[in-house]
Amino acid sequence: MERDDKTKSDVAGWNRLLDVLDAVEKRKDARFTQNVFRQVLLEIYRRQQTLRFTYPVPPRISLKDTLSVSERFVSEKSGGDRALALVGALFDVIGSHFGLFAQVNRARINASDEAIGQVADLECLDNAGKVVIAVEVKDRALALTDVEGTIRKTRNREIQEVFFTAPKIHAADADKINSRLNTAFATGQSFYVFDFFVLAQAVLALGGNAIRRGFLQEVGEHLDTWNTQPSHRQAWQRLLASL
Image 1 (cartoon, rainbow, N blue to C red):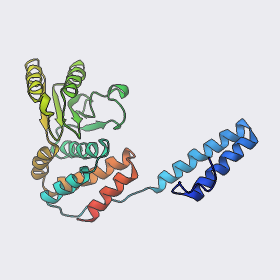
Image 2: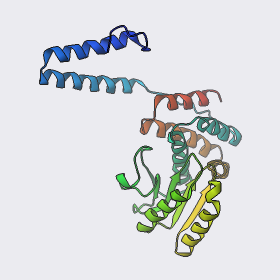
Image 3: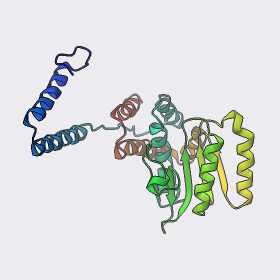
Image 4: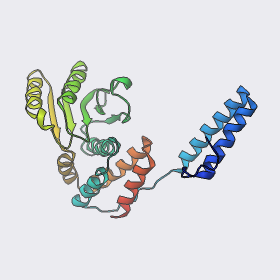
């Protein structure tokens, strides 16, 4: 680690990092090192607090423009973050507008459902806290392994209604997936596979301008609440500003 390393994008910042590390090495004091570490964490937290974005949702927006801005948003890969924000927002407004469920629980994109005790990416709960709909969100082709895992998890929790949102079904698995879902239906579970935009088109048309505005606002809420990378939040901000 050398000073004035021109391969670094921020040479001055790199040198400041070396100053901190030099001080830690010279002191060789555990208490001092701990205080430095805590201060670094505090500065990271303060920096995160400054990364606030406003999302300018227009007073009126058409169905076409709502779908278009959403499609442009997920056209850039994000490891599933952007897709989960859109689907989460859609089910939020389905619950609030149509009263089909009382609350939507969501998991972090990089946490497994089982590790946090959830049965799926989204859990739609009734007033009693029972999961009435589970939703798995994919920004890639749906594979047989996805289906098998979800059937196992939802069956263990006795959840009868399960949605998959995915842009398509993996071609090699299509027949097996259809057969497996038919078998699951015969044992008491209903599974639905939707392209997000097909589902969103129907929902956002039925709810009118109010639900479309609510959906756009909820996307921003998801991006902020789940501390999505600033680049994704900034992209959503820019897209809304362009309307």
